[in-house]
Image: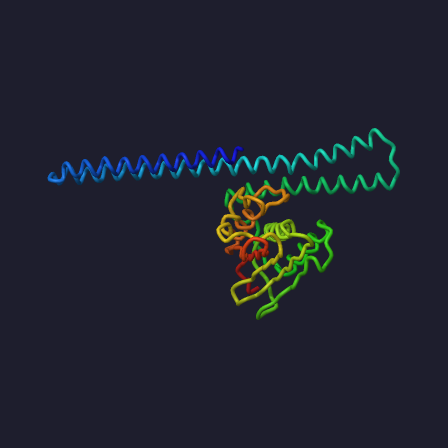
Length: 302
């Protein structure tokens, strides 16, 4: 309901801006026709009405952007609220059960495991929000050193397998392809680990049915190292491929399915890639045809 009302508001402001611009053009044109013989007045009138039209257009664009930004902000608040509330409610339920009932040792250990999983989920959400805040400030990377990017990706793959309870064939890793075996980059290892983990988590979350994700670290030339993560999930429409890296942005409609998130993961990846002099982009043949996310970084010759 709220999204529909905002779309109506956007349509209203666009229509109003177009009508005002058209009215200004009509009035200006009439004034020019009536005073066409007086060159100075016509010249000043054209500048004046041009400024009015430009102001109306810029004002309309600003209003529409603010409405969309507020919509994304509200979606982010709702997503974060859910991501924080769900594990807290789960942990509270298990603690209440342990307090009120006698449970055997096996069930108690299972409760502890589930509470630990919920705690990790909660911590992950908080860390992601903090990382997004750091990315928004565009500060320089804390410490730069030579990093074995292939080894770092391998560690992230193992962590993702464990946290998502996946078999090796569900999340496959090819260390290095291309014309070399060295995949070293200069950067902050923690930031790079965050970027790689976010790309992997995204591919796993948006897989349809059984998870089928392939991870490649490639050295296409002497200057670049690339991470390529290929999934066979929901896919992304062509017009959404650039938007998915914006802050708070999530692909609207049925592509989200029941996947929960904050809309910050790929924004953080783009910010980290930019800090390291690299870039990130996505490729997809459309809905239901999977997605490939490519993270490209400058290669270190060390």
